[in-house]
Length: 231
View 1: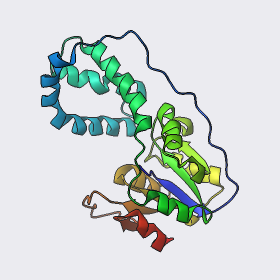
View 2: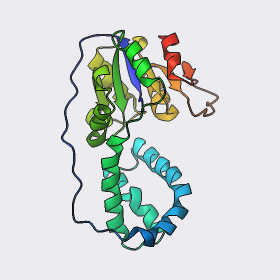
View 3: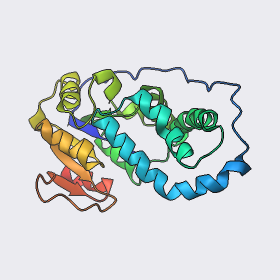
View 4: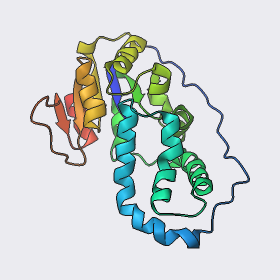
């Protein structure tokens, strides 16, 4: 999916670092799927909500990336009383991290809008995603060439909505807050974070999420094509 971008008049591009793919460990033998699938199916309605809650804890700095990766699958497996939960959780985590960079379907109009913006503005990605996933995902999506900088929280030393990651991106782009626009689809991380750094925001509210009564975004859009009217 198209992630959050910083936009300003274009300058010289900076190359995207290359990263060697991480291969999954071998030798893990999880329990047979037939033995655990009925229990896992009962967990599915709650798994997404639990994942979002845990990711929120990471963003707020209340748990670490390593803890998230260890507990992402282990906790629900234990809740379902799945046998050999540790072994299965390790296998699921490895498969999950290998699968993430292959999920490269762009949201509607993403490439059209990138084609329009590229050359008119400097584009940067600002993401809380993991280094071992995000560079591969961006390359696999075929959009790496549009962006001058990839700003990842692990490398910047701060997570959105902390204003320090936005200030780091501004420095990389030699940009001022008043000439920058943040585009993002997560209100707390992208919009509130940009507000913390005094940057205008375009909230890509494709889910139709109700907006908070205070601190409204500078712009709210339901389609990425609306950016071509704003910019």
